[in-house]
Length: 127
Image 1 (tube, helix red, strand yellow):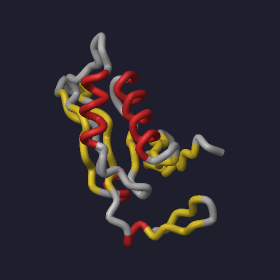
Image 2: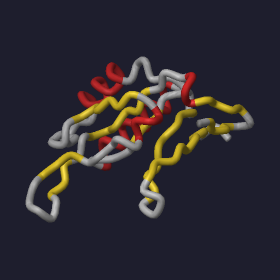
Image 3: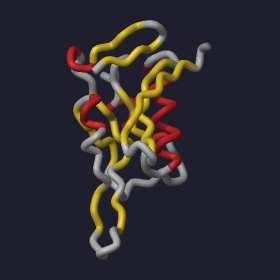
């Protein structure tokens, strides 16, 4: 499988990418059970890494969370992805930190409810 970003073809089989999921969100299912969302389709883009469990929330000061994100994302590479799910404040802080690390250029995965699959989006805030 290959994707094109800015006229550059990327063969997904040749890259050791990671998919950083902001938060491991739990949902109540119709049968009453509480289960994590299924991220198996996102795994074709790389190794799934959860940044926070489903209980994490940003409190009055975001600085401790920002320091933790900088540490956890210090090795974020141009071929890695963000999967933006969870608390909106955590999502905002995570995208800010990754944008800072990669000078405004990064990848994210968007879930399409109709196709029931993830699609890559290339972000470049410098354009």
